[in-house]
Length: 246
Length: 130
Image (cartoon, each protein chain N blue to C red):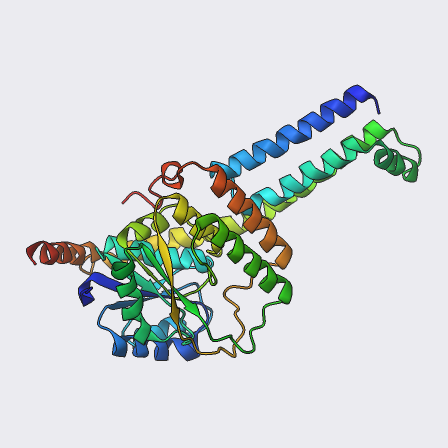
């Protein structure tokens, strides 16, 4: 059983002024871990709303992208001495009552990452079908390469052990959008993951945080990233600690 | 285009492509900066392997030598890549300025508040005791 002071909930947010307050309140009602919102250079009042809900807020001076915002949370978690972290989206589609489930899965399955995978299809999900197909193909490729069942590699609802946090806090982690290539890298580093079914709310808003790239660039980037990940012998060796020397 | 030139250019583009992938593998080059180089390498490779393509462009442009066409393509790509970098650099310059300003402000603010790392020390003590 993981104690409340051992884990932190990381919520990356970009222009989520109407929703972030509610989300933070729901998380605080569901568990007693610290809640940190990473404001990824929002143009609206995301920062103020998150602060009003009593979350710790890391306010990035400009937009860095989902992966870099998440990584800011990881680095903060390690700096503050946390041994576990859970990340979830700011828009309220992730049910905070599953935080405990994901954390328990780390112990129960003896893994470093527990991925909350949806089984409720999102309605009004405005990702182009080409990109959705690409994501599906890469998920299947990842299943093949890791020998584990992967259906939702980009799930924004995941729990991490300290080993996973240390790997992801280093410069091997992608700044734009962590995807199937991150799971392959995790696997090649000798760490493990498991998918845990969770129920998610259908989200009528469009997934603006994750759909910045065109489909062509996405496929190119994923193919190249997976190729070089497979070419690297041990991802941990190539990375230096990353971040500024404090 | 002579066979020697063809061999040279084909080899050069293959070497370039290998170098780029290796640089990305070693994390010295980010994927987002590699795509234009890879595209350039692939186009030059295709063009050098297909003499007809080169000759076609040469005729279309008024009977220019195929070898000159090859150099034209390479130069066009270099110009494009430089422009790409200039755009990225401009954005980064803006970011660096913002960061420097933020640090200056934070330094001033932190002189009047307790530091975050004090809390981390408290947490370590607590976990060592239990």
